[in-house]
Length: 238
Image (tube, rainbow, N blue to C red; front, side):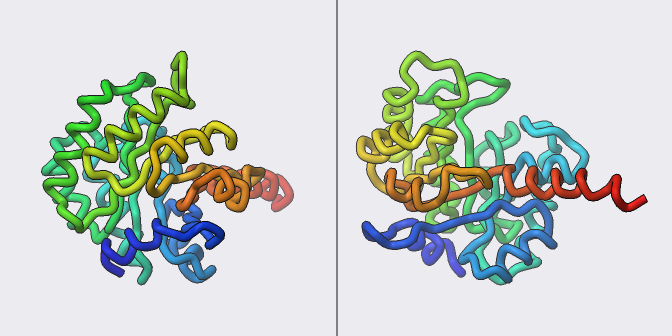
């Protein structure tokens, strides 16, 4: 599936089911997502990093992360969108070119680094340059971190950032971990495709869709759940 077709999945009419993306972390989990009938596979940077022996937070070497994304993209026939944290310090043109070489048709880019929000104008410029380098071949999901960083007005700042990122050319805005009522405020004010964050224990895709999300992802929560089950199983195997 091309980026154009993947992009179209983000635009659902009121009442239609949203695009749901359980996040994978390796070729095996990606195949399971595809076999379960999901239209696309999203990676989780945190889960991929842990599988590769690193912690989350831009600590995975870029070459290693790009190689992991390429392995996942080769393993499935559905489109792959990659969580690439804050771009791993790469110039936007290099980032876009290297990501497209993996076979991915989308990416998630967050607007904080080192535990703090990046200046909104600087982030918008970065996103605009990624868009210019990739053209329409990359579906860009702009993560907004105002609900996970110290911010006086997380909703107002999320709206400000979301609008700036839209003007920069992104396809979707992702106010990660926004409470349902506040997600609805951001969705109404920003407009366009909005990514909601689901967890295995809730909120559910239906609740997020009711709040205005048209794309829903799970972040590290699926991997966390699987690892918790494994941790519980292992002592019983001896």
